[in-house]
Image (cartoon, rainbow, N blue to C red; front, side, top):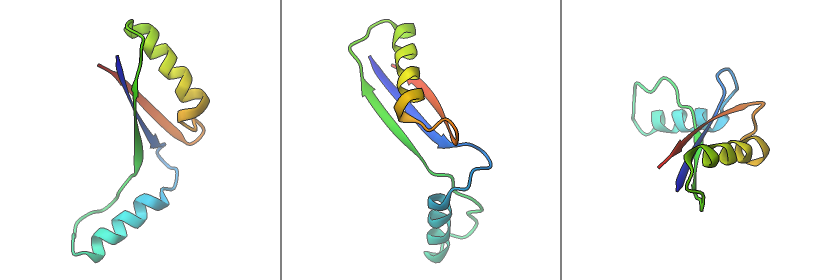
Length: 79
């Protein structure tokens, strides 16, 4: 089973990398970009075949390592 985890900074948390990308896009002539939020995607290849069990395991991974839940939110999708 494949798991995909999308990690993003929570609303209200400053995103200096996103701001740097927004500024760089502007300097390259891409007008009209009012904001950029940057995150990360983590793809996992799991031996688990039960979706509920896999999601619970990945959620534990997120809480313990993959996301800083104080400032980041995450979304899990399985396929």
